[in-house]
Length: 123
Length: 173
Image (tube, rainbow over all chains, first blue to last red; front, side, top):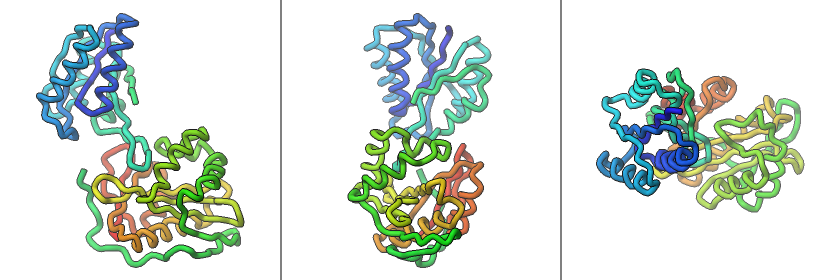
C-alpha cells in the first residue's frame, strides 16, 4: 500500500511518524513522508525538518521525504495523494483541550473532509 | 491562540451554595465541589449515557473517569455539583489553560436533563468563578447541539469562532 504521511511538527505528528515508521517496517508498505509548515507550531521549519530527519534515521528506514509547498498544507496533501495514486493519507492529530476534549486542528479537519482517499488519524 | 471575547463583562452571577427547584419540582442544591467529591462524581459518570458524551469526555471506563476527574478537580480548577438528595445529578467545571483563561464544561445526568439544572449549574459556576477572580471563560460545543448553544447564549456567551468542527464560545466576567 502506498502511504502518504503528513508531518507538521506538532507533538502528535511526531508520534504518528514514529508509529507509522514502526508499522511500515513490519508491513513493508511504501511510505512517503510529506513535511508541511503548520502555522500553529512555534518551532521554526528548519528545526521541524531536522527533528523529522532524526526520527527517520533512528528507524533505519529511508522513506522519501518531500516538502509540501503553499499556504494550504491540507489541500496540498489531498492533491498529492490523489494525483500520485496514494492509497491512504496518515496524519497525527486530535490533541486534548485543558478539560480533556478532543480537538482537531484545521489541517486535519480539511484532509478528513476533503480527501477522496481513506485517511488514518493517529491520536 | 487568540480568542475573541465580548467587549463588555457579564453581570454578577449567583454564588454557590444555592438551592433551586427544577422544572420537575425537585429541590436541587448547587454547591462547590473539590477532590473530596471524587467518589460521588465517579458514581455519576458511571451512570452517564455514553451517547451523551461530547468530544471524548467524559471517559467511559472507571479508571479513565478517575484519571480525568483528578485533572479537573485539581486545586486550580473551579467545580460545582448539582445534588438531588444524595444523588449528584450534574457537574460543571472551569479548568485553566496556559493563557490564564478557563475552559468550561457541564454534564447533566439523563434523568435530570431538560429541567433547568444545566442553566443553574453554569450560572452558579460562573458566579463562583467571579469570586475566584476568573475573568475569561471559553468553551467548545458541537455545532449540532442547539440546546447547549442556546443555553450558553442565554447565559451571555458569544460565539468566538465557528470555523472548526466545533463552535467556540466565550464570556468575559
